[in-house]
Image (cartoon, rainbow, N blue to C red; front, side):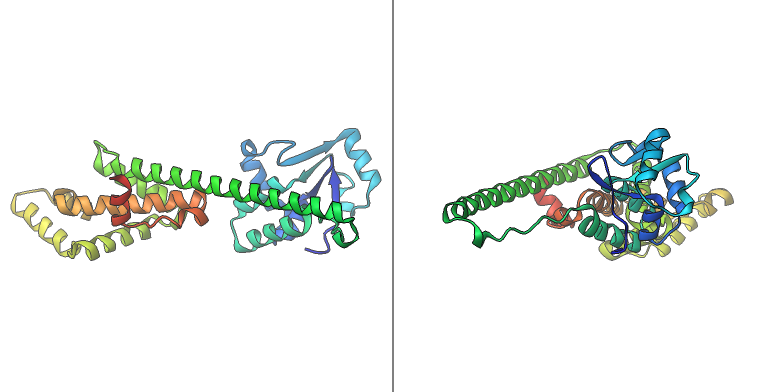
Length: 282
Protein backbone atom coordinates (compact mmCIF):
# COMPACT_ATOMS: atom_id res chain seq x y z
CA UNK A 1 0.00 0.00 0.00
CA UNK A 2 2.81 2.42 0.89
CA UNK A 3 4.55 1.69 -2.44
CA UNK A 4 1.65 3.04 -4.54
CA UNK A 5 2.88 5.55 -7.10
CA UNK A 6 1.06 8.82 -6.49
CA UNK A 7 -1.04 9.95 -9.45
CA UNK A 8 -2.73 13.33 -9.54
CA UNK A 9 -5.16 14.36 -12.23
CA UNK A 10 -7.50 17.36 -12.23
CA UNK A 11 -6.15 18.45 -8.83
CA UNK A 12 -7.05 15.19 -7.09
CA UNK A 13 -5.37 11.90 -6.35
CA UNK A 14 -6.50 8.92 -8.39
CA UNK A 15 -5.53 5.29 -8.97
CA UNK A 16 -5.27 3.19 -12.09
CA UNK A 17 -7.27 -0.01 -12.36
CA UNK A 18 -4.09 -2.03 -11.85
CA UNK A 19 -3.22 -0.11 -8.68
CA UNK A 20 -6.74 -0.50 -7.32
CA UNK A 21 -6.75 -4.24 -8.04
CA UNK A 22 -3.39 -4.68 -6.33
CA UNK A 23 -4.55 -2.76 -3.25
CA UNK A 24 -7.75 -4.83 -2.99
CA UNK A 25 -6.01 -8.17 -3.47
CA UNK A 26 -7.78 -8.97 -6.73
CA UNK A 27 -7.05 -8.61 -10.46
CA UNK A 28 -7.97 -6.05 -13.09
CA UNK A 29 -10.44 -8.39 -14.81
CA UNK A 30 -12.64 -8.47 -11.72
CA UNK A 31 -12.40 -4.69 -11.28
CA UNK A 32 -13.39 -4.16 -14.93
CA UNK A 33 -16.17 -6.75 -14.71
CA UNK A 34 -17.71 -5.10 -11.65
CA UNK A 35 -17.51 -1.74 -13.40
CA UNK A 36 -19.24 -3.06 -16.52
CA UNK A 37 -21.99 -4.68 -14.47
CA UNK A 38 -22.70 -1.47 -12.55
CA UNK A 39 -21.93 1.27 -15.06
CA UNK A 40 -25.15 3.08 -14.18
CA UNK A 41 -23.80 3.69 -10.65
CA UNK A 42 -20.50 5.20 -11.76
CA UNK A 43 -20.45 8.87 -12.72
CA UNK A 44 -17.57 10.22 -14.75
CA UNK A 45 -15.81 13.03 -12.96
CA UNK A 46 -17.15 11.85 -9.62
CA UNK A 47 -16.14 8.19 -9.43
CA UNK A 48 -13.61 8.00 -12.27
CA UNK A 49 -11.77 9.92 -14.94
CA UNK A 50 -11.62 8.44 -18.43
CA UNK A 51 -8.61 9.54 -20.46
CA UNK A 52 -8.39 9.03 -24.20
CA UNK A 53 -6.93 10.69 -27.28
CA UNK A 54 -4.72 13.72 -26.64
CA UNK A 55 -5.40 13.68 -22.88
CA UNK A 56 -4.19 10.10 -22.65
CA UNK A 57 -1.09 10.78 -24.74
CA UNK A 58 -0.17 13.74 -22.54
CA UNK A 59 -0.77 11.63 -19.45
CA UNK A 60 1.47 8.83 -20.70
CA UNK A 61 4.13 11.27 -21.79
CA UNK A 62 4.36 12.93 -18.38
CA UNK A 63 4.67 9.70 -16.39
CA UNK A 64 6.41 6.36 -16.50
CA UNK A 65 4.25 3.25 -16.46
CA UNK A 66 4.76 -0.39 -17.26
CA UNK A 67 4.23 -1.72 -20.78
CA UNK A 68 0.68 -2.87 -19.97
CA UNK A 69 -0.55 0.70 -20.51
CA UNK A 70 1.44 1.31 -23.68
CA UNK A 71 -1.38 0.28 -26.05
CA UNK A 72 -4.30 1.33 -23.87
CA UNK A 73 -6.80 3.41 -25.86
CA UNK A 74 -8.76 4.54 -22.81
CA UNK A 75 -7.48 4.77 -19.26
CA UNK A 76 -9.72 4.78 -16.20
CA UNK A 77 -8.49 6.61 -13.12
CA UNK A 78 -10.45 5.96 -9.93
CA UNK A 79 -11.26 8.64 -7.39
CA UNK A 80 -11.82 8.02 -3.69
CA UNK A 81 -15.58 7.64 -4.27
CA UNK A 82 -14.93 5.27 -7.16
CA UNK A 83 -12.67 3.17 -4.95
CA UNK A 84 -15.51 3.00 -2.41
CA UNK A 85 -17.92 1.62 -5.04
CA UNK A 86 -15.39 -1.04 -6.01
CA UNK A 87 -14.88 -2.02 -2.37
CA UNK A 88 -18.66 -2.32 -2.07
CA UNK A 89 -18.82 -4.57 -5.16
CA UNK A 90 -16.04 -6.84 -3.87
CA UNK A 91 -17.42 -6.74 -0.30
CA UNK A 92 -14.52 -8.61 1.27
CA UNK A 93 -12.75 -7.81 4.53
CA UNK A 94 -9.50 -7.37 2.61
CA UNK A 95 -11.08 -4.85 0.23
CA UNK A 96 -12.70 -2.81 3.01
CA UNK A 97 -9.46 -2.77 5.04
CA UNK A 98 -7.55 -1.67 1.95
CA UNK A 99 -10.10 1.06 1.24
CA UNK A 100 -9.70 2.46 4.77
CA UNK A 101 -5.94 2.53 4.28
CA UNK A 102 -6.31 4.21 0.88
CA UNK A 103 -8.46 6.94 2.42
CA UNK A 104 -6.05 7.49 5.29
CA UNK A 105 -2.72 7.12 3.50
CA UNK A 106 -3.31 7.92 -0.17
CA UNK A 107 -6.38 9.96 -1.05
CA UNK A 108 -6.13 12.33 1.88
CA UNK A 109 -3.30 14.80 1.48
CA UNK A 110 -1.25 15.16 4.61
CA UNK A 111 -1.40 18.72 5.86
CA UNK A 112 1.82 20.41 6.80
CA UNK A 113 2.12 20.79 10.56
CA UNK A 114 2.67 24.38 11.61
CA UNK A 115 4.91 25.07 14.58
CA UNK A 116 2.65 27.51 16.41
CA UNK A 117 5.45 28.36 18.85
CA UNK A 118 7.05 30.36 16.06
CA UNK A 119 3.94 32.50 15.59
CA UNK A 120 3.56 35.88 17.22
CA UNK A 121 1.45 35.98 20.42
CA UNK A 122 -1.33 37.72 18.53
CA UNK A 123 -1.47 35.04 15.81
CA UNK A 124 -1.32 32.30 18.42
CA UNK A 125 -4.33 33.85 20.14
CA UNK A 126 -6.28 34.13 16.88
CA UNK A 127 -5.40 30.55 15.98
CA UNK A 128 -6.63 29.31 19.35
CA UNK A 129 -9.91 31.21 18.92
CA UNK A 130 -10.32 29.86 15.39
CA UNK A 131 -9.60 26.27 16.46
CA UNK A 132 -12.14 26.55 19.29
CA UNK A 133 -14.87 27.92 17.02
CA UNK A 134 -14.12 25.37 14.27
CA UNK A 135 -14.20 22.48 16.74
CA UNK A 136 -17.54 23.70 18.12
CA UNK A 137 -19.04 23.89 14.64
CA UNK A 138 -17.82 20.41 13.79
CA UNK A 139 -19.29 19.01 17.01
CA UNK A 140 -22.61 20.76 16.37
CA UNK A 141 -22.76 19.46 12.78
CA UNK A 142 -21.96 15.93 13.93
CA UNK A 143 -24.64 16.13 16.65
CA UNK A 144 -27.24 17.45 14.19
CA UNK A 145 -26.42 14.68 11.70
CA UNK A 146 -26.76 12.03 14.39
CA UNK A 147 -30.10 13.44 15.56
CA UNK A 148 -31.39 13.49 11.98
CA UNK A 149 -30.38 9.88 11.46
CA UNK A 150 -31.98 8.84 14.73
CA UNK A 151 -35.20 10.64 13.80
CA UNK A 152 -35.17 8.91 10.43
CA UNK A 153 -34.60 5.60 12.18
CA UNK A 154 -37.52 6.12 14.52
CA UNK A 155 -39.80 7.04 11.61
CA UNK A 156 -38.71 3.89 9.77
CA UNK A 157 -39.51 1.78 12.82
CA UNK A 158 -42.93 3.42 13.12
CA UNK A 159 -43.73 2.86 9.47
CA UNK A 160 -42.59 -0.76 9.60
CA UNK A 161 -44.49 -1.69 12.75
CA UNK A 162 -47.67 0.22 12.00
CA UNK A 163 -47.90 -0.98 8.42
CA UNK A 164 -50.88 -3.19 7.71
CA UNK A 165 -50.77 -5.55 4.74
CA UNK A 166 -53.75 -7.23 3.11
CA UNK A 167 -51.60 -10.14 1.92
CA UNK A 168 -49.87 -11.21 5.14
CA UNK A 169 -47.82 -14.05 3.68
CA UNK A 170 -46.58 -11.97 0.76
CA UNK A 171 -45.53 -9.20 3.12
CA UNK A 172 -43.65 -11.65 5.38
CA UNK A 173 -41.81 -13.22 2.44
CA UNK A 174 -40.89 -9.80 1.03
CA UNK A 175 -39.37 -8.64 4.31
CA UNK A 176 -37.46 -11.90 4.78
CA UNK A 177 -36.10 -11.78 1.24
CA UNK A 178 -34.94 -8.20 1.73
CA UNK A 179 -33.28 -8.98 5.07
CA UNK A 180 -31.60 -12.06 3.62
CA UNK A 181 -30.04 -10.03 0.81
CA UNK A 182 -28.73 -7.32 3.12
CA UNK A 183 -27.50 -9.14 6.22
CA UNK A 184 -27.80 -12.90 5.88
CA UNK A 185 -27.12 -13.81 2.28
CA UNK A 186 -28.96 -17.09 2.89
CA UNK A 187 -32.75 -16.94 2.77
CA UNK A 188 -33.25 -20.52 3.96
CA UNK A 189 -31.08 -20.03 7.04
CA UNK A 190 -32.89 -16.79 7.87
CA UNK A 191 -36.22 -18.62 7.61
CA UNK A 192 -34.94 -21.36 9.94
CA UNK A 193 -33.70 -18.78 12.44
CA UNK A 194 -37.00 -16.91 12.34
CA UNK A 195 -38.89 -20.11 13.13
CA UNK A 196 -36.51 -20.86 15.99
CA UNK A 197 -37.10 -17.39 17.44
CA UNK A 198 -40.84 -17.96 17.19
CA UNK A 199 -40.56 -21.25 19.07
CA UNK A 200 -38.47 -19.58 21.77
CA UNK A 201 -40.81 -16.63 22.25
CA UNK A 202 -44.10 -18.48 21.88
CA UNK A 203 -42.79 -21.61 23.62
CA UNK A 204 -44.21 -23.89 20.98
CA UNK A 205 -43.05 -26.78 18.79
CA UNK A 206 -43.70 -25.94 15.14
CA UNK A 207 -42.77 -29.42 13.92
CA UNK A 208 -45.30 -31.02 16.21
CA UNK A 209 -47.94 -28.45 15.27
CA UNK A 210 -47.27 -29.08 11.59
CA UNK A 211 -47.70 -32.83 12.08
CA UNK A 212 -50.99 -32.24 13.90
CA UNK A 213 -52.12 -29.90 11.13
CA UNK A 214 -51.37 -32.51 8.46
CA UNK A 215 -53.22 -35.11 10.51
CA UNK A 216 -56.30 -32.86 10.63
CA UNK A 217 -56.09 -32.31 6.89
CA UNK A 218 -55.95 -36.05 6.36
CA UNK A 219 -58.97 -36.60 8.60
CA UNK A 220 -60.93 -33.94 6.70
CA UNK A 221 -60.29 -35.76 3.42
CA UNK A 222 -57.70 -33.39 1.94
CA UNK A 223 -55.67 -34.62 -1.02
CA UNK A 224 -52.17 -36.00 -0.52
CA UNK A 225 -50.80 -33.10 -2.54
CA UNK A 226 -52.35 -30.53 -0.18
CA UNK A 227 -51.15 -32.47 2.85
CA UNK A 228 -47.60 -32.73 1.52
CA UNK A 229 -47.53 -29.03 0.62
CA UNK A 230 -48.54 -27.92 4.10
CA UNK A 231 -45.87 -25.74 5.76
CA UNK A 232 -45.10 -24.08 9.05
CA UNK A 233 -46.39 -20.84 7.55
CA UNK A 234 -49.83 -22.46 7.30
CA UNK A 235 -49.64 -23.35 10.99
CA UNK A 236 -48.57 -19.83 11.96
CA UNK A 237 -51.16 -18.10 9.81
CA UNK A 238 -54.01 -20.05 11.40
CA UNK A 239 -53.01 -19.14 14.95
CA UNK A 240 -53.56 -15.41 15.73
CA UNK A 241 -51.06 -15.47 18.61
CA UNK A 242 -48.30 -17.13 16.58
CA UNK A 243 -49.06 -14.88 13.64
CA UNK A 244 -48.65 -11.74 15.72
CA UNK A 245 -45.40 -12.88 17.33
CA UNK A 246 -43.93 -14.06 14.03
CA UNK A 247 -44.86 -10.78 12.32
CA UNK A 248 -42.96 -8.90 15.01
CA UNK A 249 -39.92 -11.15 14.57
CA UNK A 250 -39.83 -10.64 10.80
CA UNK A 251 -40.21 -6.88 11.18
CA UNK A 252 -37.27 -6.90 13.59
CA UNK A 253 -35.16 -8.60 10.94
CA UNK A 254 -36.35 -6.06 8.38
CA UNK A 255 -35.47 -3.08 10.58
CA UNK A 256 -32.08 -4.55 11.46
CA UNK A 257 -31.25 -4.89 7.76
CA UNK A 258 -32.22 -1.25 7.15
CA UNK A 259 -30.06 -0.19 10.08
CA UNK A 260 -26.97 -1.92 8.71
CA UNK A 261 -27.50 -0.43 5.26
CA UNK A 262 -27.88 3.11 6.60
CA UNK A 263 -25.31 3.60 9.36
CA UNK A 264 -24.73 0.93 12.01
CA UNK A 265 -22.83 3.23 14.37
CA UNK A 266 -25.91 5.42 14.78
CA UNK A 267 -28.60 2.79 14.60
CA UNK A 268 -27.05 0.66 17.29
CA UNK A 269 -28.21 3.29 19.76
CA UNK A 270 -31.72 2.02 19.08
CA UNK A 271 -32.58 -1.18 20.91
CA UNK A 272 -34.14 -3.68 18.53
CA UNK A 273 -36.60 -5.52 20.71
CA UNK A 274 -40.35 -5.48 21.15
CA UNK A 275 -40.30 -3.31 24.28
CA UNK A 276 -38.33 -0.59 22.46
CA UNK A 277 -40.74 -0.62 19.53
CA UNK A 278 -43.74 -0.31 21.80
CA UNK A 279 -42.12 2.69 23.53
CA UNK A 280 -41.29 4.36 20.20
CA UNK A 281 -44.68 3.99 18.53
CA UNK A 282 -46.76 5.08 21.51
